[in-house]
Image (cartoon, rainbow, N blue to C red):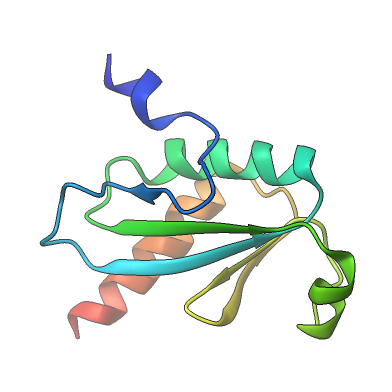
Length: 107
């Protein structure tokens, strides 16, 4: 079943939808503690599984590096160098945020 394939905790360096080279690739860094980033990455995979995109995951659990980047909320998702989502948001919020970015890329 596809759901079990995408709704998992993403691994460091893993690319979501890696086999879909025609999809745009987003570089994502997930800041926060291991528990919250694991929950967020699993939720993210479930939320965007139907969208035409690829996401390369990196985790950063170092609080000092997070503070240096201006991050104060745990977890925080940085996409292509910009703060994208803060906190353990609902899947619907994640989906809408990526739908918005994809629609802007088409313009």
